[in-house]
Image (cartoon, rainbow, N blue to C red; front, side, top):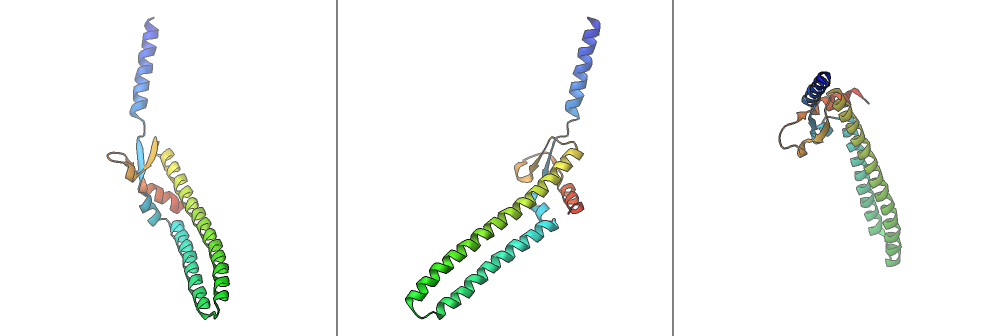
Length: 148
């Protein structure tokens, strides 16, 4: 019985020290990570270029529209351009969503790696932290710069 009480006491001590050694919660400033991540900058430029391309398309089509001389030609032109633009807009939105998801996934993977390295319990966005936590933003940025 005495050995059993010693075993319980030892297990209690181990359980308490395990709780004390828990890593805690880390947080990242997602906007700062984006600002310092070259791939995210590249993706932003690519998406912005597609947006500007769409704007230029509309400007060009507006010039064409003004050169049409009959109401029937203008109506037919409007219908055709409306369909073309809708297709371009859908392609743009799909590209934007895909690229943003790629960036998010890479940042999330880097944050997970830092979480494991630092033995943290969780990683949050800085906007969700009121007090406490460990800022791992620089570590995540370093991890991202180390991977392509």
